[in-house]
Length: 374
Image 1 (cartoon, rainbow, N blue to C red):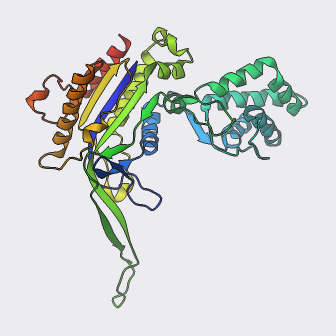
Image 2: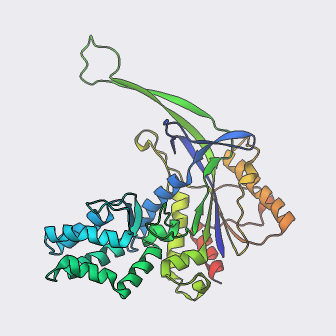
Image 3: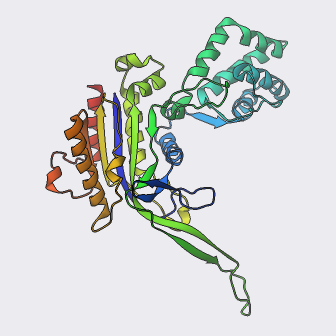
């Protein structure tokens, strides 16, 4: 069962996502080059919003210093002598990660581990510290069959909210991969990229009358546009990551937390702006169009609705919405409509699309979530 989320969001002069040269990211698509916002950028901003909205849901940390900065200070604060704690950290990190650990206990690459794991490891250090030979006690515990099972299960589980939503990617054998139930496409403008170099200067407030010129000058690229965004949520996998159940058992789990997480995710997708240069462009916008689809068929993007870049002749948001819905109708004529659809929009759409009735977002979300679990 999938939840598909299609959005149209309009941004005025802004620089939402930069490349390595500081210019707006682009992508050729169809008959034009478009402005683009990468999925990594989008997920980063959504994650920040979600950890605030769902502050009571444990999250994870993506870091090389998990053991030295998340576990070690907790153990010392709990009363374990600092020298003892430091001597145990390397032993613990080596046992959990099995390679890729330097002498201090830091990892050779960032990994995603949860705050619950940090608490568990802290307790492990404290208990080992009560023994006459803490290092030997910790090594023996880590070698025990029960603890090996615990560590094996931990390495394969989702490490907090971030991993439960966006997975845990590994580039070596440090930890097991956790598949991401939330699949995010790069957002792109429905029209050709059209940018301008913004030239700016900084005046020195302490210049004397005879001193002319500027203290600093530079330029940055700005663009405006309507972006199509597309997100797919594999709901059984999300429930599995949140509850540790088998994916085939997802319907038997209490739906309260997964529904709450999905609701917060959709709100973040529609309202969290991925903007850089906040102070000089205020790049804040909410989506004007949100189409939610639920169903068991393989998802499909509606990006091809914009293979032919739109030439603005009226409200570009309305043009984009009409082009998207017209393409959807043609897809339905070819394959049949396998999804249940729910629409929220601030736009006045032509009557030819009356088959989809717009509702306030809270009602649209409630109806979509109900359909997923019905």
